Image 1 (tube, helix red, strand yellow):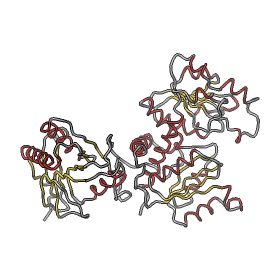
Image 2: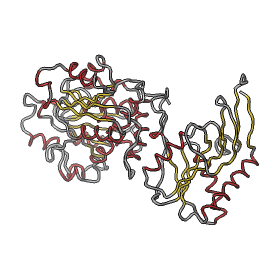
Image 3: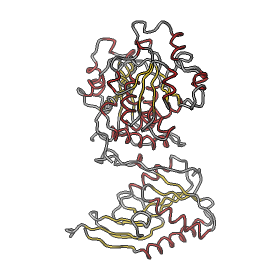
Image 4: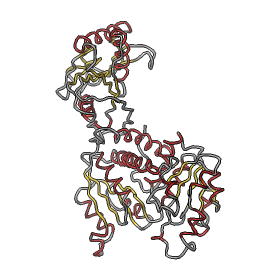
Length: 309
Length: 182
């Protein structure tokens, strides 16, 4: 088996289907590892990884950190709010300073689209994109597809609808690329104001009616409304959004099939998804979180295997 | 590549049988013993030993497979990543007598990784090693097998292959020597 075709994980767009399958295959093994009595393997004991978070995160950051520790890597954490970035240092300077302390890999979340790609071309370390603005969030898309594969056996041929704030969502874009590469059909659904113009060019279906979208799909991935990225009003009120696009038990039960419900988190209960749906057996939200660690272990492990001595 | 059969089908069978009786001598009814085959090729030795042991003993023997990919010490020294195989150990090894089983013992590094990987499942009382083929004089670590199918002397350029009826079509052990090997 060949290694990954990429040197950095900046986006799903650059990966081949083979790359994704290799990551899944490796993640299967890591999933077994993290369910052992001793959940740690020594593979990356001579690798140092810096987690640079220029934007808030709980789940992704913990998941990455846990994945790195399970692989026995040395980890340093950095968050922009408590750093010299506030004093006017540039991104490249910040990263190069960290790299001069002999760091091999950088996991970065940044509010600007393209930040990870920018960095990968200018510094001497492997870069893993943990979310760059509204652009991509590759590990989230991988764990989403991995969770679908785990529940339904395969991703190819499945119908997945992504519901909500598509315009501001990096999860949506990465998911579209990832699911399509694996042979799934993708639809986006949401208020017209939150669906990007020309998104059909990516080969996805567009639907403005939630019920119709749910009737079509096997899997519904509910996204959070990213109020922090919305500088204008895209819909009249959260209550109205929730009535039109919120997933509740009634609509779920009225479908003639049992669909799978996903959410990348954090959940705004009662807005895009009601509590009873989020906690129902159709929901695989917590499986997604568990798989997140295995997927991140796999991605880091495979990238690290390309670091020369 | 020159080919030399070290064990033919009949000798292969005899060797497996002998290993079984040697194991029984030390482990009685196997009530406190578990057998662990190392992925990817040790599991075939394990499968055969298990079949025979169960036939002789008349009851089942606890067995599992162990993958050691993430414990190897040659990570990042290889061109291509090694694809991990499945580990299935669905029993407790705490305080058990564990017998690790592999097809070829060579540098000893695989076994070192295997012992490391094993410890992630608990603290066995005792660990022993079955090597179907022992390429002696080539050890890079102080590791020896407790039960050996056959000991052979080889050059580093040679390759030993344990072949199985269910995979390669015939039970045999073959030594491959490059043509220009003086």
